[in-house]
Image (tube, rainbow, N blue to C red; front, side, top):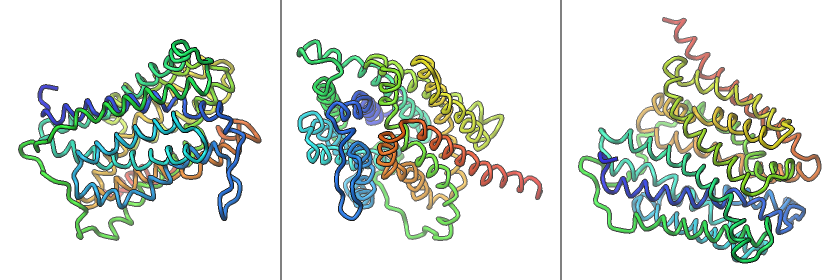
Length: 414
């Protein structure tokens, strides 16, 4: 840590507070919606018809994020990453406070929608900020610490968040596992995300030897190169379609299937986050033996039977243990995938390609939660586990066919 510049250390404190606050609230979002009675309600959408409100509320941030991405990229290129990070944290805080104070359907939709642009501002500003405030000697350390903190602090936030509704119920004489207790949790999360602004509030001084401003993609971008790089989007898109059906509703699944109390949910999701963070550190060792894409395919394939077992586990703690292994396997090699994509992409195209990869990981969330909510109403979670496993299997197969087969062909051609 002593090798890092002061602005870099301030950024790490910022992302720690922001991630912690968002993790505290994320655990109980769908449980809050159920307690508000929105699981059985629908809303009429022009030209589409009736949609489950539960799914629409989960899809709204991703939809608004997609619509706002291009103008926000232009804005960040003009104002710089620090103001954008501050604005993103404030938008997150406003969104969380809106969920807590105005739970009627329309205000709730508006509040949830703010989370989309807030997430985009962080995603497109974090890496440029770290690049600006790090030199070649400490850059890998800074990026690794940022990724590790995002995962580990997310797990810690889930652990602490699991006790917040119970504490609120005790302090304010609220019914346990009630909408009021969950709304109090969102107030706490809003305060934490507001505090995340403070480390970045002071004026920044660009570190020596780094680029002083963000540059928009140059005209040297090659359309053919972009089309060739589209192969990197296939697997993230398939994973997104599967994950969007299940992952936003895992806490709801644990509650409905096993009657999991709030504190138990916090422990389970904290363990998943911590295990995933630790597994991410192991991935480079695996890569030395199998290569980057070999490691990605192996870990994704091993996660699929764990997912199916999660849907069939007879007890909460067995399900929680399987969820821990599944989460670690499915996510541990994600940095390897990004690194492989960047290594095989010309430098001028790298911002575009990483943007396409991140966008592909979000596409499924535009409609997936709405479809999932409708399936849950009619058939329960069984079909959702099968569909998610199918998408994950297709993603692993696509990686094997596109990348591993290509590598074998190159080896045979030598």
